[in-house]
Image 1 (spheres, rainbow, N blue to C red):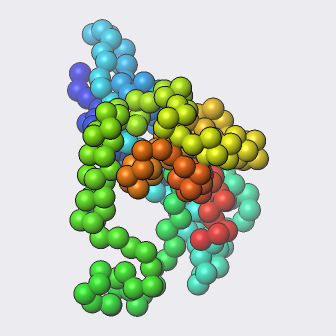
Image 2: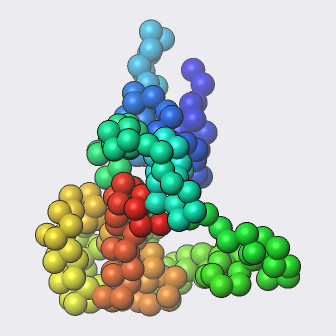
Length: 226
Ligand SMILES: [Zn+2]
């Protein structure tokens, strides 16, 4: 027995490029290792368990032609083609993503702007700077004796010492209006905790929670907005 991709990505990132091009069965088989952080395989030789604690990152075009929501090019797809393409991933797997980020076509001028890494007119952060911010956030969480955020239970995430009441009220309201699942609520709380750590804030406030909610859009909603 050899470990597969989800185990090779253990303690790292599993990146799926062009996610809708993967078969439905491959995508659905990711659900169990995402939840359990390990994968069970039963074969004639016996049953095996491999560790698979990974961060799932995926990229996808918004539609088959790739231009849905593009300001410069018109999408040539029919509505049912878009729906069929986007539904390949399936709601339960989409529900396991905590962040959706639209990546619009870059301004060509940014490519030619030398010396600033193309940051003019945007909010791009260089990788080295970003790595520093992540290291600071981790060290801040550790210095307060906190566990890695993915290990937090619902009770710990809602501990009044670690999250302001105003933030919880905001989440309750959003959970109703956005029809969030229990999994999405926990994911939003974890994300807001990470945002608070990046802000070196002991307590999650309404602003951290609101930022976490801004990433909580469905994949399809980005098509017309980016
Ligand atoms: Zn299209």
